Length: 449
Image (cartoon, rainbow, N blue to C red; front, side, top):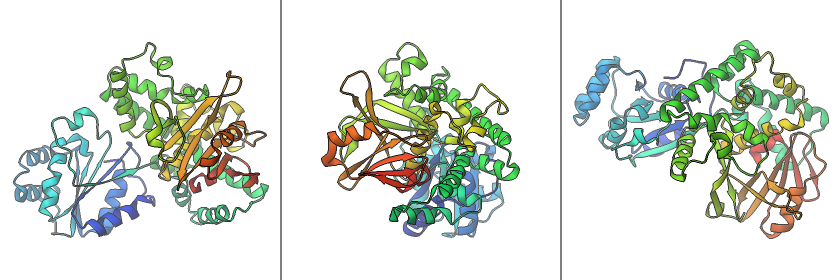
């Protein structure tokens, strides 16, 4: 189980309620997500509120008696009785839930979910990370009787809820829908609020630390603990250390502003493609990163035109990204906290905003795609940072870390693909406004795109 921190309001709770209502035990609920993203906490809160009784089986720290019970799981009467004795909880038919936490550590139990669901006495919720790693699926049949949800770090609205603010985001949604400007003074305040989210991040432990201390040095220390935990996980799935190196290199790769993540500059000589694909699959399965793939022919149905060998990597949580970017400096030396809060971030750190936009788009349910192509001179590339598919049109997004003077890539993209484009967006740090057919959107409205 994840450490016991305060329970935050999370949007996934409503999706869990819908599963309970609509499936009525016909499937198990599987919640996957990165370590420390809050899976165990929200699942136990759900069980406490929505059932008469529940049992949490934590396979990261399960007593030996649980493993023996799993060995004889074909006798379901005995299995359920054993769990009730072990945990001292009475289960009530169709009114209790059994939670299997860190399910990836017990592949045999995950395979048996099919039969537990068919038994239909109780509901079942699984949580896990690294669910597709070979050793966690070896020799088992993945059950089809699972309703799967992905849990991400707290999005910006959930972060505002944690701070006691439930008004701002609905008001911003209305403002965005009406395309109304807010004024420079209010925009500065809203951007400062957003920059606090960028610094703290959306990992519940980081948010809890901030609320308890309002000390960003303490928050940074907590984020370093989480990154160390990730590195330990990477070392377990890849003892060569290559996955950990790929993860650690994300900030420096984005700083280079290259058109793709350059594996050879991180790992030295190129790996063979099969090995590289396996490493990347393991990194993706950790859910600690967001992949953005190159759309070779940007159009509706972009997955059909995706180049999976050309991609960018973003850290799944921007708070962790900032700590990772300055890993070699202690927080007292790390002036990015002060610079970000006071809007004095230098231009070469604009990639922080790109990572933020990637996180916000992912949390809103979007897959990430981008597009590059040579300029007329051939010496440089145009680049559209993100492309969304909306109806039968696409919407290009260019990200700026401050204001803007030009938007050459957007202009060139419009000229090249005009018939395909719905709305052009430039995400930046100033107030909402229009510039001809481009909508200039403050970064805190990214989730509405």
